[in-house]
Image (tube, rainbow, N blue to C red):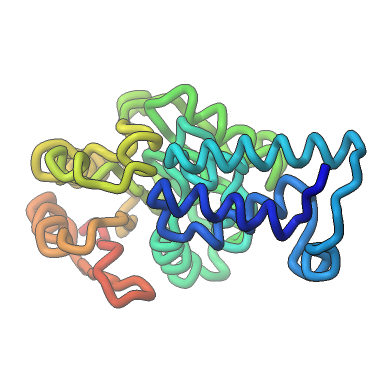
Length: 288
């Protein structure tokens, strides 16, 4: 086997470039490191040495080429490796959950800031991988967090992340269409959500990684992208304590519309908070 890590890297980068992957160089390197369980320092030392014809090397080469083939089909990098970092924590992901985005960290950081030193009872609607709920429980020390999703498969992944990062039972997981499984007497201090908010007609134009491989259930916000915000605005109030608050992630152009929905539903102290890129990302409000 006349192969080196450098040759494999160049081979992978070439395949990904042909497939139109934007960050072909970065992705091929990341997958190489994953397959060979190595890092940049060791790669630089070993990259031009001929790979030994041992079982481990043969398996690693095969795994790398398999991962490159998947990435060439535009399978998201995170689904190939099975994990994604969020808020400094490593979350497990698969095709049943939305891959956590850095944008969503804005919501988590805002709640952590607003409730620092407090112990709010939190409800996370449309939890997916559980990244919001788990991050709040772990980083905020919130010991009463409930996470809801309509997808049973998503909840299985959320359960794995709770067990991995917190310990079983540290977050209550419930299968529900928003608030359908809650009695009216159940109330929370904080309700957070990153609901589906992409208008249906926009989804077809998204990158293949998103359009073809991430769950449509977590993307499609119906005709105008506001379907779930309308429901959340109306259905959240009965499940909030007096002066309870909501924090919703939004699309960059939805701040005014979601603010209006919350105002019409009887919320006050409405704020639109920008993300690190300077785009509207979270709308928060308080029950009046």
